[in-house]
Figure 1 (cartoon, rainbow over the protein chains, first blue to last red):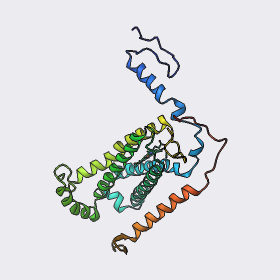
Figure 2 (figure 1 turned 30 degrees about the vertical axis):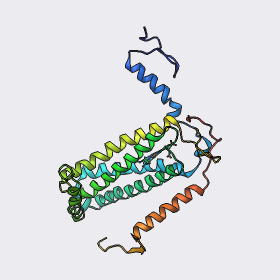
Figure 3 (figure 1 turned 135 degrees about the vertical axis):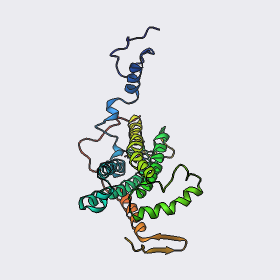
Amino acid sequence: MSATSSSEGASPGATAPESRSWTLRLRQAIDRHLPMDHLLPDRQPYYVGSWVYVFGVVTIAALAWVIASGVVLSFMGPQWWHDSRVGRFFNSLHFWSVQLFFIFMVLHLWGQYFMAGWRSGRAATWMIGVIIFGISILTAFTGYLSQQNFASQFVAINAKDAMNGAGIGAFFSVLNFGQMYGLHVMLLPIGITILVVAHIVMVRTRGVVKPIDPEGGARP
Amino acid sequence: MDTPAAYFHWGFILISVPNLIVIGGMIVLFAIALIAPFPHGGEEGDDVGNK
Ligand code: HEM
């Protein structure tokens, strides 16, 4: 099969002969699964006109504030966030945007649960959500351990026995500030951001799930 | 912050009042999201982006 550049400029989705060029194959796969009007739509099905669908986007907004305020905190350091007025303000910004992040993530989860958002090939979207939820809890936990005050020492001392009891104390040591802080400032920005991007791309490839048929059974 | 929170105790349910308020507020917000009318800008959308 001679299929080097025969499909140059082919319309999106055209079934060109298998090319040996991986860039061409990748581009065609993206065109097929995620054309631009799916990625950035300007219209949505009528049933998306409900506030329930806004919770996911609000969670992204809260996450943006968490990351932005967290970057400022990590630049300035514990002395600053405990002892200066501006530092305390950014500390509060970080803390309260995390509260909103969790509240809206759970409201989004409830919404997806009651509309059975995992239907019609969307199981992976739901499961990535579950993983994001788990990592978020871990990130919040390591965040409490990163405060550098008595509260964080209290949390660490009390948590260590549970960690040892679970058998993970040797490689997840809550008394090791460097490890907890490193996990905290790395897990959230990198791990959660990548998973959120995957989550959104998966939603955009399939479109928003149809409402459950009132006649019974899920529509395909 | 250093004083322990008040607790709500009802049978086997034991929860701090601040946590109870947060969960109650979330349920109220969820109900509002279901009931409150959503503003529609422009024409009704079609099925773009849906498979
Ligand atoms: C950082 C946390 C999260 C963010 C930023 C996020 C964001 C989003 C956004 C923007 C959508 C598009 C539709 C909508 O907003 O309703 C969506 C869809 C979805 N989310 Fe999440 N989500 C998160 C966590 C979760 C969790 C914890 C779950 C459940 C365990 C979940 C399950 C789903 C499912 C199943 C859909 C697909 C709905 C469909 O295809 O119609 N998400 N998410």
